[in-house]
Amino acid sequence: MSRLERFSVEPGAAGRRLDLWLAGKLPDLSRTRLRALVEEGRVSVDGRAVKPSVRLKAGQEVLVTVPPAPAETLGAEPIPLRVIYEDADVLVVDKPARMVVHPGAGQKSGTLANALLAHAPSTGGVGGPRRPGIVHRLDKGTSGLLVVAKSARAYSGLTAELAARKVLRRYLVLAHGLVQRAAGTIDAPVGRHPHQRTRMAVLPPGRGKRAVTRFRVLERFKGYTYLEAQLETGRTHQIRVHLTSIGHPLVGDSTYRRRGTPQITDPALAGLIEGLDGIALHAAVLAFTHPVTGQRLEFSIPPPERMERLLAHLRGALAPSPHPPPPRGRGPRGR
Image 1 (tube, rainbow, N blue to C red):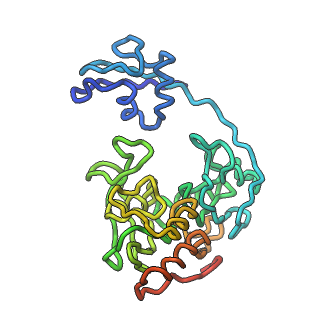
Image 2: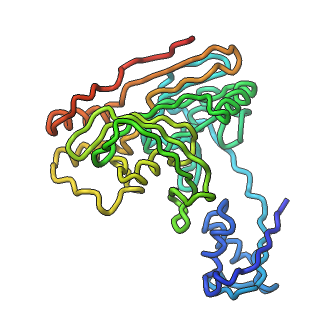
Image 3: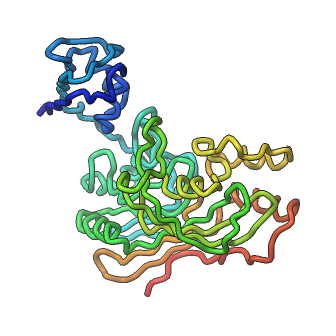
């Protein structure tokens, strides 16, 4: 069924374009879809159909009729997966950087979701129709461990465990600048950036959702810090936003790179960063209680080669601190 949204233009919004104003009122809809709704006559201002560029006046009534999105099918694709663990209910994979987890704007195929349907067809009836069995996600540029539910009972148990913050997730991170504290906690709300919909941001108290990231320094180099970050919550882009908020954007992250970030003058280093083909962020440790057997499982994998090459260069070319490298454990451990 279509839904009807009714808004009144507040005094502070007088003079704003309709399409831009609506983007803030209906954040679940893309600007492309909002523009299409206006052009289809599904948006009225004081009872009249208008153009997306119309300038609003205080007190005007805006009605938006949002029809249901057309049903989309998701096809199985025989894309190779690096399986770390698998049983009848649970699958743990090592997602490579540049692989999108599920279809979205600009990415309709070649995703982890497409690969999952081919590898484990039972995931097709688990969770949402476009996110088969997917309990949590990793950003496109992030590599590492991700758990998938192969059955409805596993999906229910894992999502509840995640919501209760009982799933352990640790990441290896290479950030710009020298993080002075050996360890710390960033507790700052995260939400959609007020002006750039593709970005998230740390927001003032009372806005956004609570987000907590714990970190500890593993190694320091000249101009860079290698850290381990642990998620207490799982907000979109959380580690990237939190570290940027304290002045340490992640290497390779063009979305959150700050203007003041020093230029890279070492051609070899610049080439290695280009070769990251993503962000210097890797989900290295994942632990959860098996939703069916009740066994506690823990998995750990070392940094991928894309990050290892960069770290090796930094260790050789830039003076490292005496901090030891992270543990190199592999595979599952039950307890």
